[in-house]
Length: 471
Image (cartoon, rainbow, N blue to C red; front, side, top):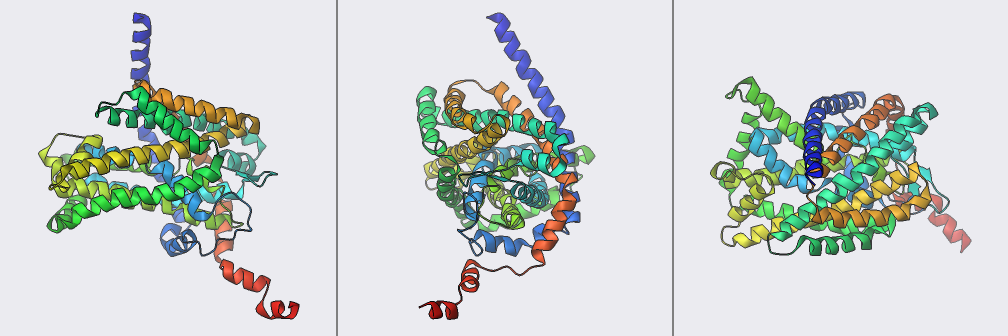
């Protein structure tokens, strides 16, 4: 028993050390790639943002196109995975360790992340596979193998293996554990919570991407209204604190009052939490966006670039401003989700329990949506590795691991999942960098054409004068 205990401690310590070690170079790799594609595509995330809103709004949806889900459903599924407990706990941790200026550097990662999401998701849709039943499979493993050639398949396999591991750890067990530990504070045993959330996850994921996307398209707006709406109420009741909070964010982002070391700490914590929050460049979201119903891969890329915009520029910003405007960063020593909860409790000073309910409900919804979305990432990865016959067994195993995540201590699993998430980024970014030429050609060709709405498409396909003649 002592041997197993010591082995567990050693593994936990080793994975924690390795996770910290790999995160630093990964930050520079992600930022460098984000800058590279931004310049190569002439800052498409700014030039075509309006077009992104039009596509997400359904202006160009064509139900006759191949694929599984609409543009909005694909974005919702991807956001289900990225809007997670990091938006609540991660932002608070960045502010505690990096100060208000860390939020500014999170915004920088969102700006560069929008270009990365556009790139990886356009490529994923372009190189996807449409099966005989009309369903779609895509992701970095497909554009690495098909775009770079069969000799690159080992890299594609490496990505799929790491994505599968990550689906069980970061995307599943860790989220279940967070929910169980939160509810345990109310006296509910973790096994009861584990059984309940495993059942709820199983209800959705057994049905595949169509059911996942249908649930996500309702869950994501609900999450946003609940959480962002609560934060906005806090700000509206403290209008005089908004400008000082924004001033602190911008001034401390470049402040040298703690020396160069202090400034580097601010930058690193902001960038680190921003990148891990929106998952840009990590290769997960392209799997969801590959399922979109459209013939235009660049159009789906335009949808995808909205991900970091919503996740970081809106949701993370609301967390940060709620914490800063209520003053809890200075008045308490709390960190993580507890700090965000205290900000909402303080913000709803007349009824603090409402603030707690909003944060606790958001923790559940954010974590639940992440578990649901990551199951799809995992089943596409296992399909690529083994074949379609492995999908249903994978989903049942995923549900079982969901239950186990709720009842087990997960320090080791957290670290192991972070390592897998970091490592899967490397083959994905290699694929993006080497396929930037193809991406630029696709982008230029798409935006050189006039794009018809679905109504215009129907009118051109069957004009009124032709319909009258037929009658």
